[in-house]
Length: 262
Image (cartoon, rainbow, N blue to C red):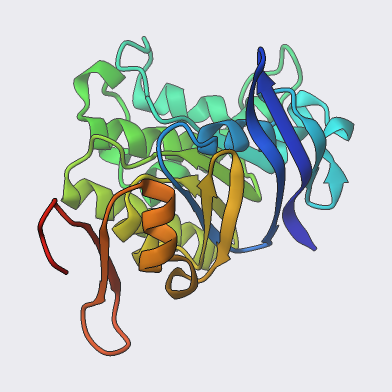
């Protein structure tokens, strides 16, 4: 079974077409990173997958049409982590993470012992348990992002969509977040689909990359297949250098300044 299937997806903002006949299949347990220049439709594609933007075409979640899911049922299978986590959210870390259980509760039902256990487990997994009684406005950006991921984990989804989860974080926090996502995929079998501007992080962690250009997916494959000089220069409109750190090692992508040689 595939986790997410996108077929013939088109999306317009007014008269402007954002997505153009997008086709994509993501396997269960895969780590897929969507990359591409600004304004090429990456976040719009992620939102369309989650049902947050009305798009023409078809989206299947775990083999079922997105339209067949109610909001609560979808939230039990799919969680979304936005790019920006508000710092003025007037709740503690524990309260915020526990909100992830709401799709599993009836309208007036209170969280029970099992819900609290799952929330503690999610906080421990993301290493924010020691912050349980702190408010979000007391946390750093990296800590807030881990709390948001903990809330998503607490939903118990099989698919997690993330929009630039490492944006504005320093390199140490970026690696911690990416290690956490890989651990989710490896230990819990979760399907991870994320948008990233960081080509090097994408190369380090993505099992497959989907490169978007002008509203279309121009290439899908492993990092070595997608991150080629010709393809990147055509998409980003600047000169690029792609090197391996060592034989069989990681790919590193560097833009080149005018007059600079690779």
